[in-house]
Length: 255
Image (cartoon, rainbow, N blue to C red; front, side, top):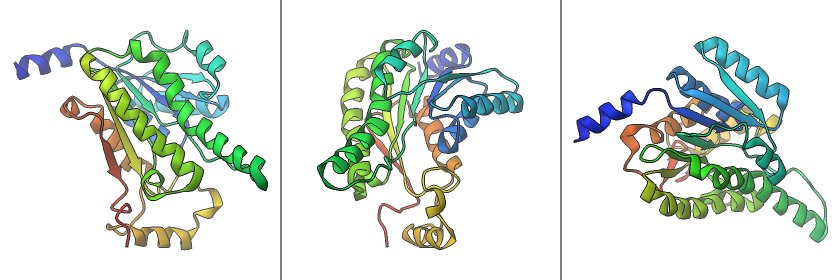
């Protein structure tokens, strides 16, 4: 029975994979891994030129067409407009889009701007698109993988709280989609170099400090997170759902 199921899955051919925030950093590394496997790839993001450049470079490197879709995933009107361009069947949806709200200000208005901004950037960017395309996820093969952060578990103000909200949402999503054979999991990275997230703050001194908080003596790379995502999208991970996969070199445990 298991052999027949494996053969059937292989006969279905390349998967259709949608990666949000796929233009840079972790999202780009994830997109590269799926493209290397020969999957049909759609990358979604806000910055048109960044997205087009990524799509062109990935296409050239792997000899396949990559579809870029420009969309502000926190804007319901933008998401609704993008639905016509998103695939009618989706095998893997990777919710990677997200960032930190940089608005500053004193008093309740400043607090509101930070908290609302982080909620919109990190929660709505995953929830709006996933809820909108969940009926397109392939039965008995579909995967939803959401990239969150170590901050959801160790604290981190409004940013950490927004990522923690995704953990609770993923539990509900896994229960909802499980009967259709669709798995829903989270990957929680720690410090990852080579992204735009930290900017100039992640200098050599800070890298050394953060590496010392891990148990393996180094910070993460985008490829580390991409490998975890690809595993959860695989046939071998078909019996794993509702889980949070720590991908932070033991930084959660600290020192």
